[in-house]
Image (cartoon, rainbow, N blue to C red; front, side):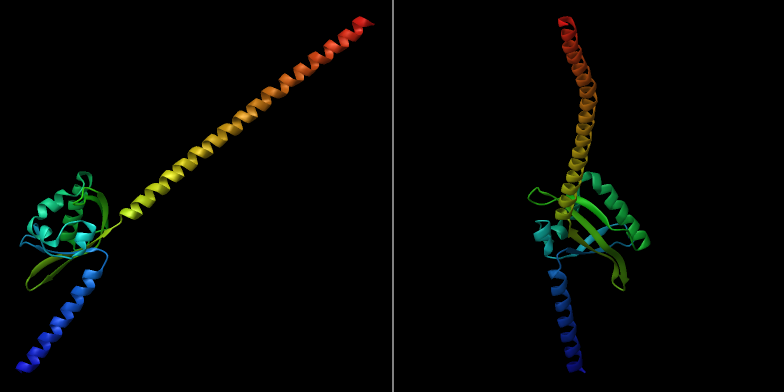
Length: 195
């Protein structure tokens, strides 16, 4: 019996080790929060090492001072993020949410919280989520929007140029007609006076 238990413990340890290695290789911050009895207060109990790459902060900093991590969320996005968290806790699911946050080095990054869910077992209630760095995608989107705006301005300027050319043509044609007519009359009147 003891040998069977040791074997199962070893298999469980190996399985946990593979799971942890897989989670820690993901290009996202994997988070597990413990919820209190009223499901109102969250405390991080697991933060993947990717936090150092994406956020510039250690997992220990998340676990020891979570309010300061939350304070790094851009003030315009913090309320929406907390409302999404409340919705998730109440209903068990929520829509993906994108928000800005400040890295440890002061750079602003965009994060996307996707796949958040609430799980419950005999040891308690947990919130599990993943944060992906979408800063490059947001910069590309901003550049694309700027290029589209520049293209629209260019199209407007092109239309104004065509309109100006049309107006110039409309002014030039009658002016040329009047000038040619006056020259013809001057030449004809000169011939008539000579006669």
